Length: 154
Image (tube, rainbow, N blue to C red; front, side, top):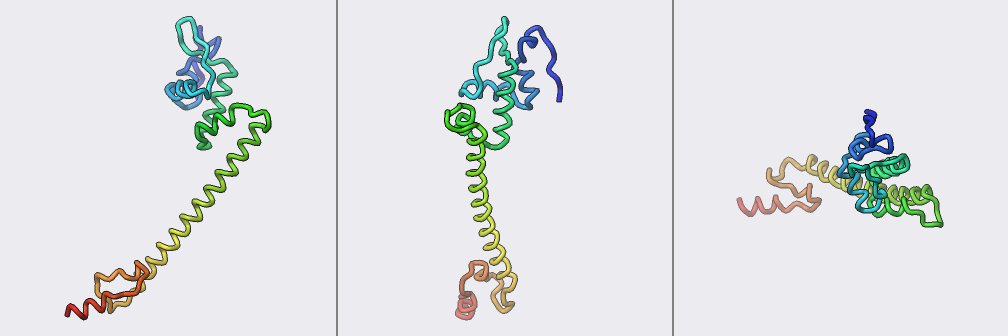
């Protein structure tokens, strides 16, 4: 990863572009996180550039890392602000437990849909060759009435 270039201002902290580069994100994202309260407002240089000290860099790194876990903004707020009862680690574990339960349920639903589609596919492949060529009743898992209609049409 590239090191931010040293400027007169960066000796007191990193500029927003330097921090964004360091964290592989964008200055726009960092400004947004500051706007919604995930990051404390940055100090300003004499020329009004945002400057991030070591503590702000650590917080920004934490926020970016947690976003990679696909946590929502409210979940990030919950993790970053001490509730006085549980540790950040305990709160993150609870969030991850819930997310794992939801993903396992989603996988179960998807597996059921996949099994259903496979059964319909197999039924269509096993179709009696005496059926009309347009018949797809087996894929619909219903009794075939196409042969009756063909005989009535003929």
